[in-house]
Image 1: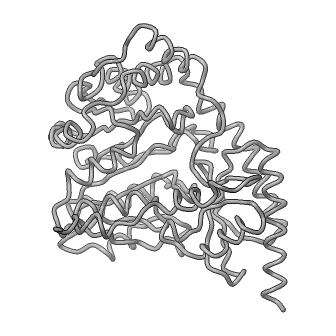
Image 2 (image 1 turned 90 degrees about the vertical axis):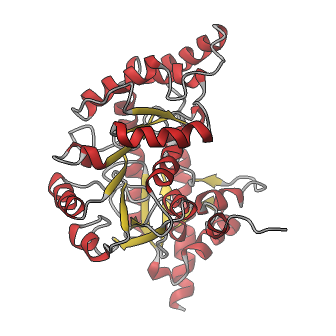
Image 3 (image 1 turned 45 degrees about the vertical axis):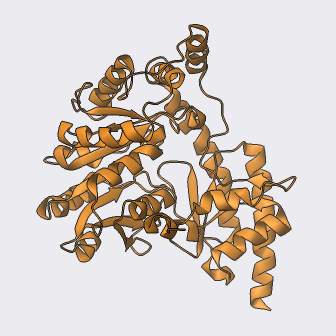
Amino acid sequence: MKSINKFVKVAKQSGIRHISDFTDDLTDIIQLTVGEIDLPTPENTKQAGIQAIKNNYTKYTSNRGTETLRKTIADFADTHYSMKFDWRKEIIVTVGASEGIDLALRTLCNVGDEVVIAAPAYPAYVSSTIIAGAKPVFVDTTKTNFKMTADALEAVITPQTKVVILNYPNNPTGTILKQTELLALAKVIINHDLYVITDDVYDLIVYNSSGQAQSIVTLPNMRERTIVLNGVSKSHSMTGWRIGYVLASMEIIDQMFKVHQTNVGTATSISQIAAIAALEQDADNPQKLVKIFKERKEIVTTALDEMGLTYVDPQGAFYIFVNINNLKISSWEFSIKLIQDYKLAVVPGSAFSADGYVRISYAADKKILTEAMKRLKKAVNDLKTIANS
């Protein structure tokens, strides 16, 4: 039999899902793995979806997304980014922001192109780069407060570099870039005539007074070379509805549309109706989430401080990236031990190309988090005893 696509064979399955699948047959396990908010979709949004079904709005829509939703997204972008995007020519509604990653990389990359990714990195950036035939080039951010710096970016650029992927607030660290840091990156990107994919899906879940994280697309001379990925999965607890969107110039969108049209055709009609309600009637939902996540974050950070574990203090999203290097065990081994011996599931840093850390999601109820921290403390104390014996 002839061989399967070599790029697909080389790409790895998500380490996040791998560790979650490992717990499927276990009982009494506390899952702090998948980036999914435990809270329900807002009521107005749910009712809009229900009404869409009752109205038999269950057929194909325009491949680019419904006119009403694209107009709503354009209005949101006008307010959120202070930028105009033409709903006809510069927006595609995608099956979650994840489809946007694949669309963008397959549209931009030729075989042999290089894509610069900050490590630790969301696994889909790496696998989608490889499947597109390109080469992921990692920038180690563990020594720069988990932020991609202009100097570090400059150091890895070659004649083959095509794209830089940014994700701030970052998954898995929760870090955010300041405007000065974004400006420095933009200067390098413009000087080398590169494209940027900015994954802004967490940009409304931030803990500063601004209420949002700045995106590189808003900086001078960046709009025409930037592809913005966003959606309602995180901001409105709508992971299962699968609605994201892409913002880019008409020249880029026209090419991405070919991939989208071939790949999925159209996002779900019912979910598109719900997304309109999310962005309009439930526009305040991210602020409600932030208040809840601040309390949850404190439970976890207080416990980690008591355990003597260092971590990245998240400024956005709902993850904490914890340093376990002093426990003298790999992140994968630690994660498996937590599952088997302490009935607690977290994601190993190796899933994000950063061993020596684990990611804890605090998108869970406070009682669950409190119990989870008790189990983690027991595991850490046991391992410290072994390491010091």
